[in-house]
Image (cartoon, rainbow, N blue to C red; front, side, top):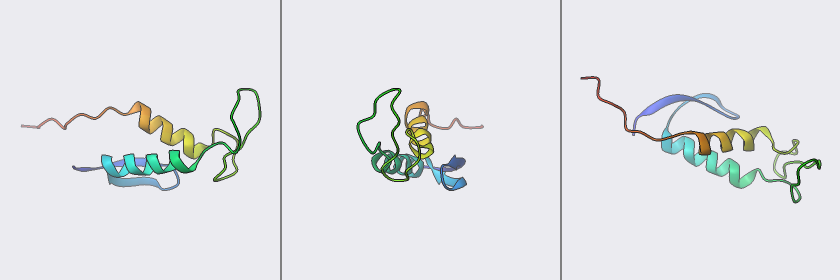
Amino acid sequence: MSRFTARAHGYGLVDWTADEVDAYASRLLRDHVPGRRWMPHRSSSCRECGESWPCPAAAWAGQWSHGVTRTEPRSRF
């Protein structure tokens, strides 16, 4: 799988494969969870980083995991 430039939360711009970004996003989603049961209109913080929930790491990982579709690169020739 080829590398591409992407913005990864906490790293900035990286040259990773899609599998590497997927693995990083999965780890963030596993580690960054609400400190208590999350309910709308109720303040909660991330158990890992202490930021308001949803924390920036979990938000980035969720957007990556749910918003990216995988397609094989087209040949230029």
